[in-house]
Length: 136
Length: 390
Image (cartoon, rainbow over all chains, first blue to last red; front, top):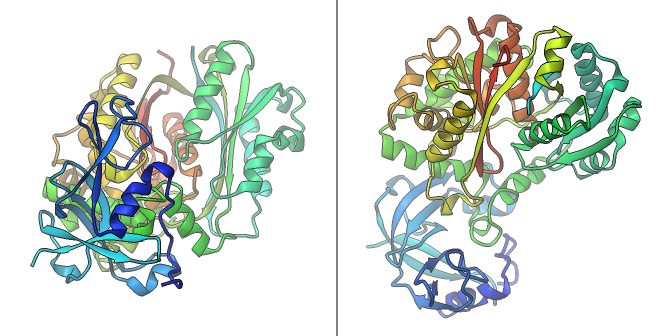
């Protein structure tokens, strides 16, 4: 897996727990113990109330496609082998929206409102990226 | 406080690495100062538009080379401002402050950009990393086109706009560009079929609906309303201004089509100008992707949400239409010169208000509204200009 040449997420101290979660096949959502906010992307302090008393809940892994776009060209060369790439914004029932890719799918049949589920793909020893695929 | 644009100059948008940044910069600065009818030593401040992805040029501008190279002996201060596509807007705002508090009577605002000498791979990387998130978006292969494809797709879902209607926006923008000697697409109109049959880049965006990166330069000389009137030359008078921030990261925005930002920024600007949206003879929308030409009209209150794509498809926003919009052509109809797109928008607005827009001239153009945006539309900066002071 050391040959992974695509850009890796630039991890910050306060996002380490998220990436440790994905390594363990868990999708974590940051929460605020003071104001109950659901926070994405994870921050050093709650963007709603500035509390530093933050916590994590494990998401169900289910999500719904809010928007998608199938990219056929115009990517950096390291991404070319993956074309077409299905970009998506997915809404989690836990209250956040995140950027991901829809994989294991026919790009022509992806739809807004479609139900998807998380898939964890280890790309290096340290990084596991959460992707989503259509619910069978 | 008041601000008037009294001198402009621009070089045609092209891809030509033989035309250096400094060649173009010198030409447009000299051109704008001559157009203003003042002496070069009357310029008391130079506020430069930050050139994107060109670190050396940005440093040259930040560290005072512009007045030195041009011999602007009256220059008291310099600055370079960077807020992406809204850099030019912020140059105008700072210039207004300098003029108002007596630091400068005349301010020069220049821009120059060459992208044709930058490798394509580096440009894709720049536009994918600069306005997008390195941890939560970039690892998924999101490009600028991809991010805008996502929003366009959802916009079409929510409004029912068809692919043909969306393509008509590009046909109209290229229609303006085809009449504009400063457009890279001068003399090159496209048809609906040309747009819909061009390569699919990031659904639903075809190649012709995406930006064509190019080189360009422009400059303005600005002063107060009072001095502009004393000079007795045609000018564009700023009458009102408003701005709203939408957020840096596309996936996180609660206002994905910027409707609220367009609405509130235009309302603030129109209120200050004591005018209504119906008083506008021209609407100039810098959104760089076609859906913004629609959502901006919906935000301004020109029509209801979901109606704008049909208005574009009827040809009402193009040359000769009853609702002229974006005669500058936007980046898709003119060529994308980085932070220079907003410069070109102001220059085109000045031409329209001075009656110098040639074949593209909007008849009786006395009031124009212009909105610029930076990053991946992180903000909407709306300004009202008139051909006379209030």
